[in-house]
Image 1 (cartoon, rainbow, N blue to C red):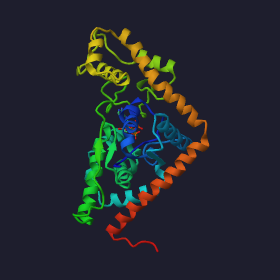
Image 2 (cartoon, protein in one colour; image 1 turned 120 degrees about the horizontal axis):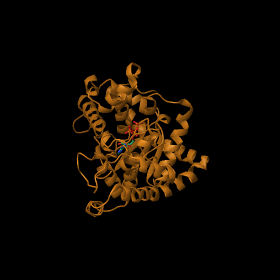
Image 3 (cartoon, rainbow, N blue to C red; image 1 turned 90 degrees about the vertical axis):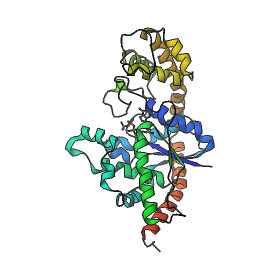
Image 4 (cartoon, helix red, strand yellow; image 1 turned 180 degrees about the horizontal axis):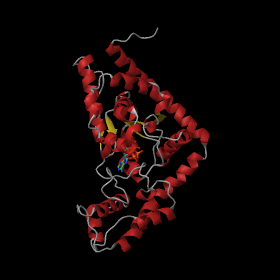
Length: 334
Ligand code: AQP
């Protein structure tokens, strides 16, 4: 089977963007791929973090993967920091990555502004670690949301450069993976500003639907989310980004064709649409929340999953690391 690899940072509660942009697609394709899914806890400290919450958040993300339908029959679930090969390969990559390749990374610019002078070097070199995370497993595809496309291009550039400088043309050291961006849900926007993506790090909780939000909170968030005073709801109007976002989410959650939703919504006002949207959200999230509670109640189970995941992932990661080190001319320990 071809292989896919993807991960999410345990930087807070997962939201609808993480689900529709990433996890839901992992579930959809898992039958056809050998999946490697990890919690990117090394990336989680590139912005200020609370050490008392990091381990817990990491377990919670793992539980959420399983609650959303990831099956251990098809997937290996592991914690990034449990496998030292990630940081070691990142160092090797950082020595062959020209500094100016990192200059234009949009995510760095967005997050660095928020941190001012205290911004850590790790936030700049984050995409180099991400390249190591991916290339260690030599995946064919990387299913991510639209926001990660630029980082994936950098990953391919690093692999190509290493192959070119240290490999043989007929036998590349690293495979160049393809991005796999969902046709729907690739960019879920904030509830309070339809021009910005929904994000864990937005200071306002009202800007996102967290996967663990209870029904009454979902109802409140949708009641208060940004809309306009125009009657008749439409897709794709550049002057109505919030309207497009909410209709698109409703279409995905209810599994309806765009034309059906467009026809239904054309005559509607917000007062009519919002309760329908709220119900759709609640009915998709309810079963996920139930499974999540069950998984979190059995700590031993989750620890076993992560232990087994580490063993399997580490074997593959170490094989790639040795291959790269040999190509770079390192001696191997005896
Ligand atoms: N709004 C979004 N729409 C679609 N996909 C999204 N993803 C994140 N936000 C959206 C996808 O979720 C996966 C994991 O993302 P991440 O947590 O590793 O980092 P991120 O993209 O930076 O996510 P956040 O929520 O914005 O986190 P913070 O605020 O901590 O940076 C990726 O596949 C991403 O595409």
